[in-house]
Length: 265
Image (tube, rainbow, N blue to C red; front, side):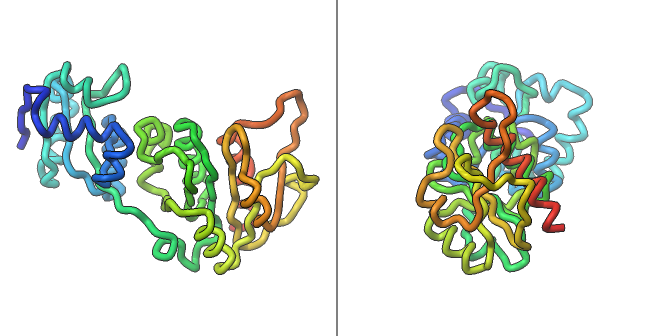
């Protein structure tokens, strides 16, 4: 069943719009996803979908008729609003005319980093949403078991992050933790902490990696903080053959993840 909403002052409209802000997403443990493809992926991954908003254009396309029926069969509430009001619910210029509000649960290290995990990615103050989303997507492709985001990282439920993950947000085990608890538990579970660091003589492809690795990727401008560097077991760098000072954080993480993965299969 579809409920029609025509007023921008409707409480459901106001509530949905509020989820564009990090503090409200955190408070409500909900975030928004936009687009037909990512919503189908969310359904395939059994995401906890609270409700869906569509605009007039979405409903009027024949190819969407069956999809809307499937949402109704799953007892997912559907709200339809005008194209004009719908634009206030999104942060993009162009839209496919559908968004969903998804519930999430905060994951803890103790409950979500199990003994079978061999490859963990630790992110220290990654702040660019595009980088964060690309890193999550690449970690999914590279077979990373879990991602730990430390204080100072961009909100993983930021709409720009969600778009950049291309659906991998629903596949990955992403845990927010403090640096202290992350280091303590990683050491306890016998992970080698491997940090990407420019001031080392160790090239990433000239060393052998342990059977359990926690790869640390640092802030785009300042790298990994000194305290975490001091607690690392191994420091590695990617050679720079040209004149660039460094590589983009997402590119660096991809190169290192795929190299390390060779030792863990």
